[in-house]
Length: 484
Image 1 (cartoon, helix red, strand yellow):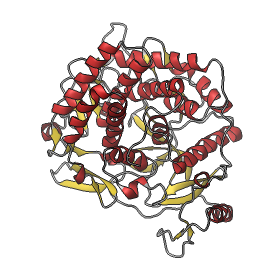
Image 2 (cartoon, helix red, strand yellow):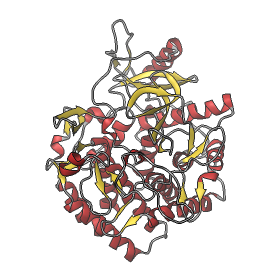
Image 3 (cartoon, helix red, strand yellow):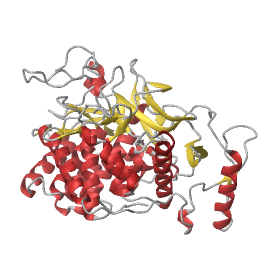
Image 4 (cartoon, one colour):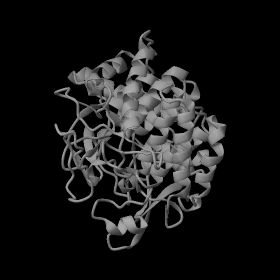
């Protein structure tokens, strides 16, 4: 499987052989998001409208404190809590009617069963892990967490007998308890799903494969969320989950109120940096908080929030820049732990902005991060706002917004429909139906204009669709939050 460094995508040919899949195709660790702060950029604002709204919120809050944003000379002061109307008992103007549809349970279960087909086929018995994408035996730590999520949901939804589930979960947790850490502190960014050995950045990165090349606190946060879900809902696996966490030196990752990543450059020099931006930062920090390590500034959605508007919907950007304002972390927090009042308000507005684009353009809009089989990047972030541009696409290797590809995300469609069901989310779920391949799994979604499947079945799409189904069946988050 490892040879040329070229990234190759495709389906099995007529011979039934599996094509080569290269490192560029899998989900890249989040640690390359924000290695350093960047200056505040221009963004599209409607100052009067935003300030009037925020002033009203502050008055309703009983005189909430004011925060002077340090984003440039002469910038006006704004309320400290621009997303808090719901937290103070004020109905959100962006709340949606929770429509219910009698056929919903079957819709979710059928979608989850198709997702499970991918996970079961790509499961690696020796480690308990799941391949990140079809035929590619490597996974980032985010992918590893998604594999645990998919196993958990499969048992709860009745797809996997309890005895077989326990065997697979024990194997996965035992692998996590034994596999090598980077610098003796945290899991490396990438591993082999066949052996559990550390993997490098790419096929030719022998240096990274030898000793690891750093950790991603964002990806580790997702793993900690899922170890918490397992610990808090399945006592028989609690001790094994706790043993995994005890291996980690979380004090090296949580410091000064933030989450810190570390990597090793090609020259061998180590680099440490704050990692994460709104809203990934809050989701990852919730995982650390669940295990008693609170990154207070990372948990606080308002600490670095800067007000913007997108299609007349008030939202927030991150004053530090380089955020990926997309569905993924918001949907995951809602499904797995439940939203804080601030995060719920952000979720309502994020969905409202996507719905507004559909109303203005006729294009069904559901943004997320996804593996898309399009050269040269193969993994894309579709954002509601990016550097002041609405509904722009980004990749980790460049800070410049792209115009495409644009797609309707299957996992985000099901996630939003489970959390905030409405006629619009139902339309989104119908729109992504061509991405379903019974017996094989789900493509990442469908392209906006052609509505043709993107291809690219992967563990993250599968896991989130299964989580959405379990959320719908049990009527709420998969676990109770801890450490908030």
